[in-house]
Length: 349
Image (cartoon, rainbow, N blue to C red):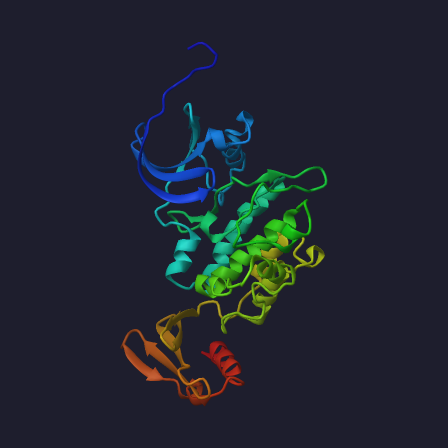
């Protein structure tokens, strides 16, 4: 075969649309005819791209950013009207889909966070800012590992470490969006902090705070450090971990983590309350933890806010016997002592 340029035909059949990843694109589950397997295809209309040189920009960035925790690109191709970027299909979906269904334990949150942050650190090492770190863009591989995806907003940093995005996700906005035209890696660190905040507390907790009368009220809350509420975490989240996330969310760039590696190292030091999982039904908050051959459960009934009831149980798996843990069960708790009582139970059970 002579050396030179070849043009070949690729065929895939789109099966269904699985997400809207941006203003200029659609995402489909597709069947790759050549390899007889399922893939994800991102379709980008050429007419909506700034210029012809941008056709394969995102695919090139992803391809050049090969890393265990970054979604890989299988190939890119085009027709007269659109560019197509083919990527693996991950049936486990995204972290957003996961936290829409359930709360994560601290151990799960830290593991997923260190994984996607490792991918982000790789991106920064290549001189790029992602500008779009959020649970929607973190996919779960077949081996349940968190992979960064969607580089549609990413930009190369200049020699001084600055870049400016063409757009931004409106529900996760760093304060410097409104105060500076040039952004640094601190922008991505803030978005990572917001993402971990959501993983720790759940989407309902986060979205419940997005109730502002006007857009300006929203902007003021962000620039003033009032959104999200840095004092509002689920009771089992250790104070040390809260401080790490709040540092990533600091409105002052110099007071944030100065690198993704710094954030990874601080998260790696957390060793409290790792396996408690929170759930809620009606007026009862429940925390459950499995340890060896036992399951521990704490139920907090707050239907009567001035006299809350807390019950703690231990179940031995071998016998199925469930017993109440008397020293961590209380019939009358007030707003002033419920938090300290819960923290004591988390520590001792």
